[in-house]
Length: 443
Image 1 (cartoon, rainbow, N blue to C red):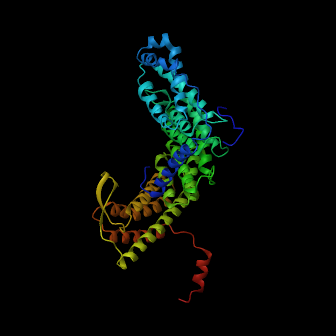
Image 2: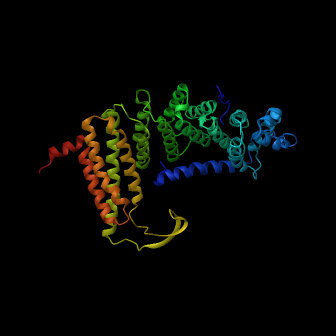
Image 3: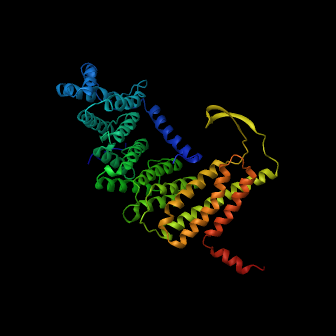
């Protein structure tokens, strides 16, 4: 096993919930890096007397295979004893250099190599060094070093011309994700970095061996299926991490054996608390190929229809609140505001703080529609008609919310009509108390 168990504890969307979760996760990483400077962290030995002097030789080896053949030892020494150890420095003023070193490694070395053999040697050297950085314990390497190390693993290829992922890196990243639910060996930032790398590998699934795909699917499904946050992460940020794992799983483009991949995403959409996150999970289904797949109502249609009803209820509530606010005459005048709008940072915009937040509506309905249309061909014929009815209900609202000329009051009226149509098309199960109320009703 690549990483031994430690002996001690160690779609871009507009919805604000997912943006906040991402920012929280990044902020947690940065805060961690800042707060632990005074603690003891491992820095790999840096040979700045001999290995450092081989930089020019290493660059010559990139351009000339003959130079590499004659100076391969110096080439290896430069990277293993100087360049990669620089990523592990703990000096507060140099910690941020690890990110630049990572980018420069690929830009100025890997992609500058004229010979695949030299690229292959660089890949092997980088893999060995990154595993060492990630696997160091008692003390571990600095969080910034570990995060950049896992990102490098995700970028390594067997063949850079065809973007074929490096098999050993796929295995290492899979082990990191697999350990997320069973051990505290790797902090959330490293797990995130592994998911980022595996998402790229999943996109190149045709180049992955079957056993790698099987292990990858199992690790992702295990993380997606765990509802209890890991390592004391807050609920919102952990939900975002699970969504990121689901996105990686969806990138494989297949429902999986016995629909395991599909089912994992459906269950995630049912278990998340935020309507926005649930919609984001359902939208991932459009990345999966459902040709010749058969799905049933209980495991697919009903959970998605339940989400449709919840979206309808949430949007109806927002529309109702907006109408009440308008009826009371509490609308504010349009005021100039400056901010990072689509026109660019600092572009003057005019935003009414009391205007209806239609981007929330757009994100939710677009995600819901994407998921419904993705699975529709695999559902029973009668259920497909229900899907059509839901899509027919939400499409006019998407059109209205997208139009610049559509007034807010017209939009909220369309939303309320949509909510009624969805509940008519896919009504929920009648509660026993509702039936009892009907029996006791006088009229």
